[in-house]
Length: 333
Image (cartoon, rainbow, N blue to C red):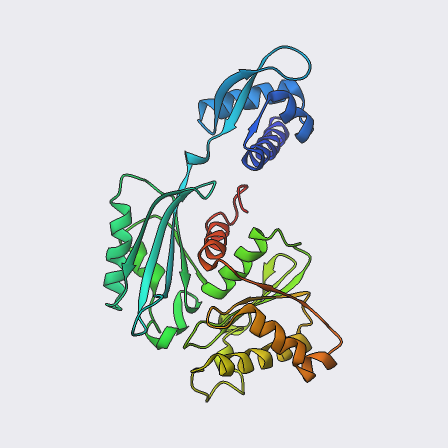
């Protein structure tokens, strides 16, 4: 019997914490009404959450009916995460990388941020960068890394300019720290992050395309709220498509747009998604829209998906990284 009571208690606690995480601020009466948990149980759970500083007591407020009641606030600073992105540096004369780092709380509020030039492409330099953030006064419980490539069983199989191939990020970091390091492909995170940011339905099938300037595109399939990956997690490496595998990176917006149209046609025929999420900074949204409208092939295809363009790369990627570090948590976005 006590085991069943504990299960019910744990379930109620999870429901209440999830509600407060989403709501932010609530009275006990609101908690009971919105969660369906009895007032008596709410009183017990709130006392526990306050003691653990998961929620904080606020001021007395006057509800529409009844006596003044305490307003409780979810403590978003109870947990922090380090969000890192290895990405191409904008406005650089030569193609170089940088590590964009942010420490955020559960609400995504930035507590510290720093961009570090990644000109010395070595695993030791990456580990030193992680230690820079570890040595700050803000403790964090997980690290999320957006990576321009694909990793299988902890080993990099494909990456930006092949410079990270065969690296073992997690294994190397585990020798220095017990803080979990979670790594995911940048296109995947960009697609998931945009879906969360734009509040898209999880029942949609979405194909995400990230086509950086002077580079080859990455592709994501995100269906029913889950990422779909193939053998060795390599599904989505567009540089291996037949029309791109022996082609140089596009040098003009016209070349990039032509490649993009072929990718759209292929994935529209094979996947028939509800929507394409597209990030291609070197080509304007208007140019892509016009090219799609003028495409004879896309016009002949029965499926006519919506196009959603990423207008703020960093924000969308941050949403994706927050999703990554809260995986398997009741606070997952």
